[in-house]
Image 1 (tube, helix red, strand yellow):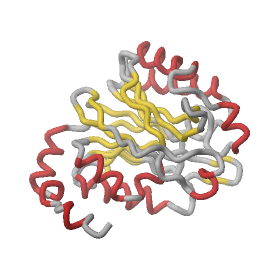
Image 2 (image 1 turned 45 degrees about the horizontal axis):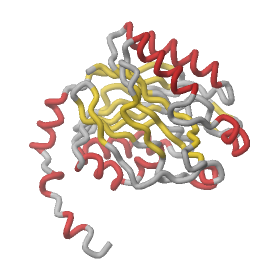
Image 3 (image 1 turned 90 degrees about the horizontal axis):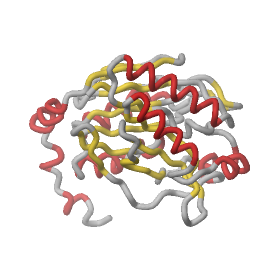
Image 4 (image 1 turned 135 degrees about the vertical axis):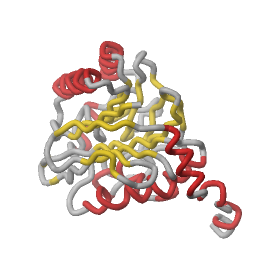
Length: 264
């Protein structure tokens, strides 16, 4: 499978404009043979926008913006992962990402479980204990968001559930470059899975984003890595390499969960 990743500058509060950017990136990715496009955290609305704007822009997972993404996915025959502020049936607002396949079907809507500092906590409710693994183009796929990947248990939980590919929309900022450079490579290698880390670049008010988005192989080697400018990355992922990695490093089968969690 060929994967495209969009690293872009934030465009806060302009949902129609961001949908147009998404359409352009989907077209570009599809023209280069990609079957999947991954965009950053809160891509439709911008991330650092404050509670009042989050409340104004939040939509249901099947709301008008989701229907626009469905149309884009169908038009370009490409699966899309995008971040947005979600208003749940319970009235709470979540930092969410949704995976829409090339036929326009929602395969997964994931709500961020680990909120980062007051910035996240003033805007969002934490997502529930729900880490789905779904099938896309024959791959077992899991989703996390930004700070979630910094807890090794989250990626390990997805891998133990069968995930071969973990998609991580993010809004990682300075001075946390080490997450882009070290953490995501470690998560891929310790679980022998592919990992896609889609970040912003540039600034959003006082926040300076790190860029350095990447597509990482199951041995922890970057297959594609961005700098600090807007770009689209492309990489081929091969399922057999996941199986080979898990045979060479059998962490998942050798893990003694009953020992690890005995005193938890």
